[in-house]
Image (cartoon, rainbow, N blue to C red; front, side, top):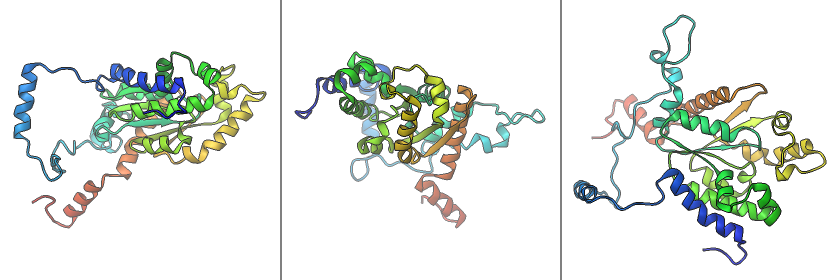
Length: 293
């Protein structure tokens, strides 16, 4: 339902964003299953024992609950045997996917920080995650570029539409999402980002300006774009720095280098922040107790 103050662009974006996501991910719309599939599902459902509340019970000691994948950077068996070669036999991004267990990754940061390029590469390397760009979805849903949206409807309408796109996106799992630079400033958006892991790509404004010089980005159409960029960075700094993972990007780093740094930082974050049940299981083992009788 839309409020009376909703503009045409926000209504159109909300409706089309869901359809676009269905096409991009293939999970938002369900298709009629074949009779054989339906029968199989009925058999499986009849064998499923539901616990209190109607939920299936998951044994935290099972392989499905804990895939047993650890940080590849801390596993000597995954290192190449060549003397002095500390690279990995497998892509650590591929091993990140089972450790995330479906948790979404949200890339945040200033315009021009590389969220879309890096996020897309990380998703491709992970193999089982899709990549989505909220700005691209908004443009396709609205049928206009972001500068055109700003010109036609203003920044406030753009922010409302941006929030509606995030509403549609965050309902999915196993996705890497590149977000707009100012999306984090709305509390309703930030709360949705917190349902996944948030990665902040931190880049100095001077480096960003070299990347996007001559840009048509609406917020930088000022007499001094660099000063405007610095001001925006400072305004958003407090929210950006609340990210789960901060990756500092230096001038000259390649996309591959940044992606590698993100993957390693995420593995380390998972090590430092294990789920509560895993901590309890480790404590029980240390105390010589059985985790599940």
